[in-house]
Image (cartoon, rainbow, N blue to C red):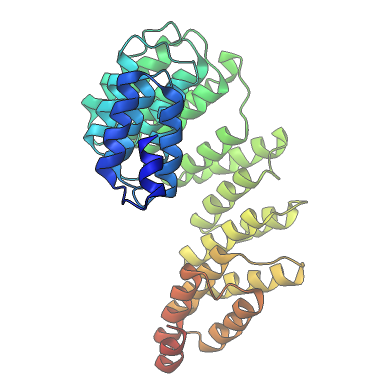
Length: 358
């Protein structure tokens, strides 16, 4: 193989070399050679070249390696219009995508900047798999991300089978696009549809309660969550805590928090973050101490939240205390934590320490 010979003789191989080699694989229809070139690309300096990755996807699509092409597309960080056109063209040329191909593709479409472009991919669902729940859910997600709520509702209403997954995606879409009333109505209609709310449903509805500042509904949801057995689920617990703290219902928040049998780090982090966000500094620092007493280990996000509150109230003693814990636990190398430490010291007036850490 010419490229192997070039490398053996030490001849530099650049992006243009790889692109031309991939064109050769495309012409002769040799997928195995294409995969070998892909391996060489990964080992080279052009592994992050968008132009090379576009050519690689084109080679895969035209040689029957559709899933390989989509994997390349997934890992491509700097997608350009040629990247999208390559995928669109590849899926338009008589291929019969697997029922899992479109959910992956529509997830990618959430990154696209143009609704018309997304609609082009939507029109590709002509392969008899539009009734698949995974496809329906991905379509709803795609349209909600670009604010096309009418099309999102159309997909949902035309789906022959409605699952809790599709309903959850709809409620999440309504939250994203300020359709809180519609989201609540859908939630209230779940039983009539023969569906039971799960942890994702309750998490989304608590977000709705928080955004609409509906304390009454929040309390009702608390009862439903406990009754359904989801109170100890991390995301549900976190959503409820954020909602209650946001309402200023600190007593209720701590009653619920202390009543959870198995508190995971997500729940601790959510409670501390919510307290910090609402300015309850002493309560947030006190909860960090409770976490340590319970044998838990704060993560970088919890440390970040605590340093933010220390910076906000210029709490120098607490900053030094928590900083020593950061060093002890080995988080001094985390950029997110270090930035928060520097900010806290600077706002406490200790410029020397801030410079030393920087």
